[in-house]
Each structure stands twice: as structure tokens, then as C-alpha cells.
Image 1 (tube, helix red, strand yellow):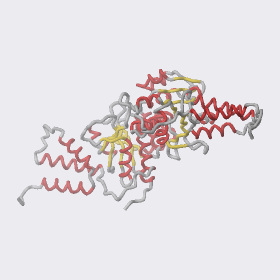
Image 2 (cartoon, chains in turn blue, cyan):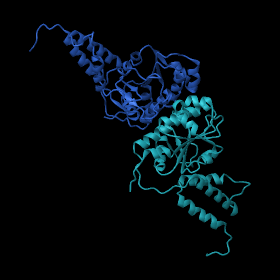
Image 3 (cartoon, each protein chain N blue to C red):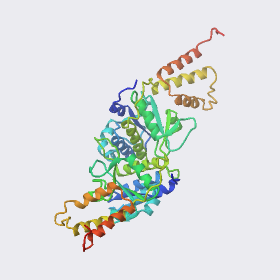
Image 4 (cartoon, chains in turn green, blue):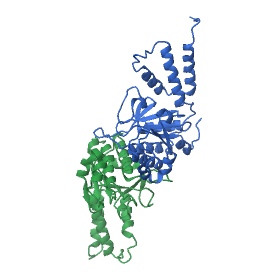
Length: 250
Length: 250
């Protein structure tokens, strides 16, 4: 059955997360860009300087977003409660990550944001997202830029992404049938920790030579977009795996 | 018959025109925004300060666009040779002007830019385009923004518009059948002048009480998107209208 959509609640379910931003002016310009497109929730992971007068000046009429911005120590904290995180990337980084254009990302994300919080994650001005940050995301989005000069300013990238989100939401592209509930970021992190413990327990993971095993597994599950129930299922398997084997059925 | 499209030549046929920009930094940021989307031709109508070190600083890798930028005294000069001009507007200004969303404007403009130069025209930071500037445009484009806060930074508006142009061109939305040649801006201006003279001649236009008659007529023809041949046809009518009437057939 198709559900009725209240666009405002969709906007409320979207976070913009800026990681380790160097220039406070960019935080202000990003807040302005967000507000022009109806977005409200700004998260700042370890900003170099915040609050800052330059950020406030460049936010112009969007100072309320800065006042309500949530500052965290880690990306994982900023993603607490999120069911889906999309990292912005200037180039195709990993074959293992699902990478789509900004327009597709906006449509996909809006569909999920009807029901659950989602986040768009932007890296530093100089180097973008780190590998560890990318591993917190389930999808990568690229703004199709001039291959000879693809250097969008941070606030410009936020503007384009938020514009596409607004277009997706207003166009009503996102009329969807009933959906299942996706696992939140915290549930996923809990699962990954549990998985790692289990791999250590069974001796598959060698702490002295981990071979990026955890990262590889994360990316597989990221692409799978695990549902809440599926995480419970997988964790059930892990719990059983770690139980002392008194006897086997087989 | 459908024609083959060389995207590069389309990019070459698109101008971005900034009217009376107050802050040179915005000119630099706009140049950067253009270049990230593959656009090349920047026109500046009466900029407050240009060239300027702040403009160059904010253009980063797009200083070449600033070096090649063409500075003019009037918007009409900047539109010389253009077959179609789209003015950016933050709100619906005139019922009489065709007003479309940025996405539609990009698709429409790209179709024309396959064959002839077109321009996107941006007003001042504070007040946008003047009525006289709007009257040089055949279409208005709006970026669908948050009605409670629609104040996009100038460079942000340029970024979104150029992004939509790039998307339209790369998506190949613009595969079109053979098109007829549109009249250039100079041809249109010549026609408008001729029209005004004719209206004075026949006594329809009273210079003491013009009642915005010229503006109204311009908007009608703007919406019509006159072809080159049609301008010739109309001017033929005007020429005959002004000829002394020796006799009438009727």
C-alpha cells in the first residue's frame, strides 16, 4: 500500500554531516545552502573552529542552523540513529562501495528518509573523506563534475546535494510502497563489533595481520543495506558461533 | 532527422552573465562554480570591482575564466550574438514572462545551445535583475528554494544552474530533431527599435504617456522565441507600415 508523504517530516529526517572542516566560513556557507533548500540538521565532526564569527557571518539568515548544530568527536556519534549514510566523493574511490550520481543518491535517500533518519557526509576541504569515514557510509555519491577541474567548494557541493534532495522530495519521486525498517548506524556498529569479536574468537582474524578483513566485511554489509531484523538474525548467528560447542548436531 | 551532438561545442555556446556584481569575491566563486561544470564563458556587466585580487583568490583553479572574462557596459552588449537569454529570478516576477524551474531551463537552453549561443543572466547580490534587464531575457528560471528562506548566495545559484546544464548536456536529454535558427539578441533589439519607431509613426505610442507599451510587446515576442526569418518577416511589415500610403487595395 502506498503511504501518504509529509515532505516536512522528510526534511526533518535528513542530516548534513561535515567532517573536520578547516575553514569556519565554509560551515556558515554550508548552513546557508542547507536552509535555502529546507534542510535543518547540521552535524559537525571535530571542526577546527566552531562556533566562530566568520561562520556566523557567512550563514546570513541561517544562523539558527549553526546555533542548533551538533558537534561530535566521531562520525559514528553523528550518525547515531541514522538508517543510511551517504558519503560525498569527488571521484570513484572503491569498487566495493556502491557509487551513484547525486541525483540518484537524493532519490534513494529521500525514500528512506520518509521513515528513518539518513545523513549526507562531507569530508575535509583538502582531502575529502578518510577511508575510516567512508567505511561508516553505505553509499557514495558523486557530483558529476568537469573531469579537468572537479574541485567544488565544500559549500557548493552541499548546495548541489541539498538542491537535489529538495527536487527529489518536491517532485514526489518518492511515493513508495511499504518498506521494512533499516538497521540504524548504532545497530550496525554493534553488529560490526560483535562480528570482529567472533572472527577473533574463531581465529579467522589475526590481530597481528588483520589484512583489512573488517573493512572488507563492512563494505559487503554496507552494500546490503541491512534491515533491523536482519541484524538481529546475523547477531544471533554470531552469538551461537561463540558458544562453547558441547556437542554438534552433525 | 536527429543530429549528432558534440557536448563540447554545447558548453562553448553557453555564457554566464553577471550583472553589476558588488563583491568581487562572488565573481571568483562563480568562475570556480562554472569551471567545475565545464562552462567557460563569463561576461561581467558593469562589475563594481574587476579585476580584483579577491576575485582571483576565490576562483582558485579557475583564474583562466577570469582572465578571459568579457566586461561590458550594458547587458545588451553581453548578449550580442545570443539566440536566447534566461534570467535567474528568486521569485515569480511577471506573469507575462515564461517562468520555469532551473531543470527545465537547462534542458530548453541546451537544446538551443547545440546550434547557437545562449546566456544565463544573474542580477546583483542585493536585488537581482532589474526590470530593464529582465526585458532583455526571453525566459525566467527559478531555483525551487525554501519559501521561508530563498536567499541563495550568487555563486551558489550559479553552481546549481551550471550543474543542471551539465546534467542536461551529459544526460543527452537534448537529442533533438532539426531546428530552425532563432533570431539573435541583436536582431531582436533591432526589431524592437523598429517596432517602437513604427508605433510612434502610426500614433499608437504616445511618448508623453507610454503606458509600458514597449515592455509589454517585448514580453510577448520574448515568449514567442522568434526565429531569424520571422524577425525579417515582422520587420517587413513594419517597413511597409511606415511607407506613405499612396493608395490602398481595399
